[in-house]
Length: 160
Image (cartoon, rainbow, N blue to C red; front, side, top):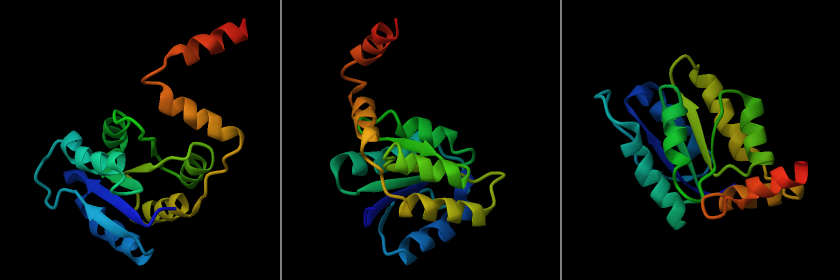
């Protein structure tokens, strides 16, 4: 897993922010922090954007985003070409998002999710390698979808 990581959060994640940042640093990551520092209401797309630009440019190798539900940050992140952001609310999702989908961005939910579970999800995601093999071609198809939508048509033709 990468050693340089972008981190961002919105106002809803303030309560978990410092512990997540600390854990990333304890795990040996250089962290670029783009997150909100107060509970003042902010718009999550504005805080996902700089982290995703850092990921797209190669300035970082991966990113972690946190908002109230995790849904908004993951939706914002997946608008960026080359970003494969997975919302993980349990250990299985964290593991499989890396193992089968080579997720380069993790979204976490801060509301109704214990900090200890988010820390375990984060560690699982970071420590799980991509399996490659048959999953590689699927990841390549994901990354090509915005440019080439014929993949869906080919799949439909093959199925009939």
